Image (tube, rainbow, N blue to C red; front, side, top):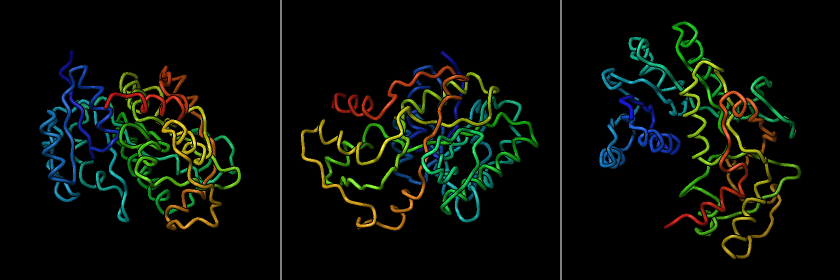
Length: 289
C-alpha cells in the first residue's frame, strides 16, 4: 500500500479509470469537476472533489500531490488548467514526480492512411486540433523552464463501460457511415489507464507517447461487430457524402491515419489487454451487469 496522491485537473472518463486502478494500490485521489452533482458522487466514492469551473483555483488543492493528471480541454483562450494551476504546480514542483497531459492524436491531422509515430509531422485539420497543439506547447514550455516531469499522451477514440459501440447500438443511435479507405484507432479506457500507470512508474523514459490499439479500423466495421454480438441487424451502410450528420461529426472523417503504439509498448512494457476493438467489445458484452 502507499500514501501517494493523484490530483486530476478534470475528472473525466480516463481520470476515473486511472483512479480506480490506483485506489487498489492505496493512492489518495483528488480532482476537479465542473458539476456540483458529480462532485458529490466523487466524494461518495472516496475521492476528494473540488467544484471548479475554470475560474478561481485554490493552490492548496494541490498540496501533497505526487502526481497530476491534466485532462481539461483547451478553449479559445488556451488551456484553462494551465492558466489556473501552473503557478501552484511550480511552487510544489519538488514533491511532484509525474505530470500527465492528455492530448489527442488528432494533432497529426490527415496522413492519407499512413502510419504516424511520435516524430511525425503535425498537420491539424480542425480548430480543435490546433488548440491542442497550442496547449501542448504551453505546457511543454513550462516543463522545460522548470524541469517538470511532464509527459504528453496523444489519445485515440476512447471506449469502455457505458461508452462503446454496444451502447450506441442498444440506444438505437448507431450509424454505419462509410468513406473509402478511412480508418481510426481506438483504445479501451482500461488499457489507457494501464499505460498511464506504467508511465508513472517510469516518468523519465520519454516525454511523449501515442496511445492506440493494434488495429486501426473503419468505423462501420466496429458497429457491424457490435450488432453481431447483440444479434441485431446492422444499420444500412451510408456514404459519408450522403450522411445527414453535423459538420463537427463530418470533421472527424477529415483525418485518415494509422497510429503506432510501438514506443508505448517498448518503453513502458505495456501489453494491451484489448489489442483490437473485438476483444474490447467481447469483454464488455460479457461483463456482469
